Image (tube, rainbow, N blue to C red; front, side, top):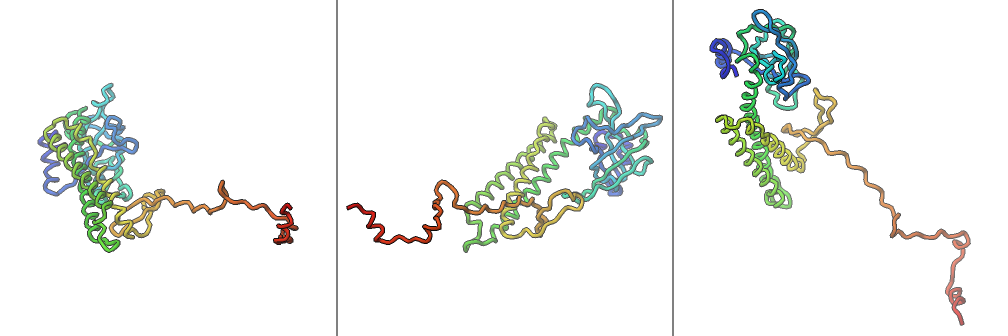
Length: 316
């Protein structure tokens, strides 16, 4: 965003050190109570002499603690046009009024450290506005179009790994004196995984072209099919490994103690545990076809009939 909408002075002061690997940066948009609603953020930037003072909170911010500076999305207006009330700022993380801390360990993408930021009258000079005041929503929307197709690539990578691991496994796993890749049901599963993956990849590549050409970029960037295909491929792969006895142990995530325990494999694959099966009901003879015996009296239990008794009942 600074490259496309920033001033030459901003690019020289902030982008060059990042490009030379001397500094780290990040983007602060989401808030504790607001995620994807870009026109609903509450962090405010109040105009003061020489610049702005930021007050509010940001959450799920990459490099919130590690970065040298961040691009921060804040509210600068109260007009009826809710999309024209936001502005982007370059905020140096050593500024007074900037406090950040790490969010506890995540379940995935652990190489990216996320943080929680609190702004309290954090001063930002006017020359650190990116683009124009009130134009932040539109700049950010364009940026997210590019980011979404990149996230689609993340999903494709996960799906490709799941398919490759599943194929390698079925080529080695043996049952009934042959490898399980010879079973038709297994072949159907692998085929469905490959079809889904290739379809998602073709869609993502087309979306990349459309976004790069700015051809209805918002529509093509909002598909979200690739991460779904990654999840599907991963769960399709899971039964193959579960049946081999590869999943061992149970683990409760340290940062989410309220979550149920999950199974963990030697490769770190996580899977929800199925609900415990209800104990089998005892089999009884009760029912329409059950044979019921009339209880015998004490006299009947002590008296035995003989053939002579039966012949005495015969007439004539």
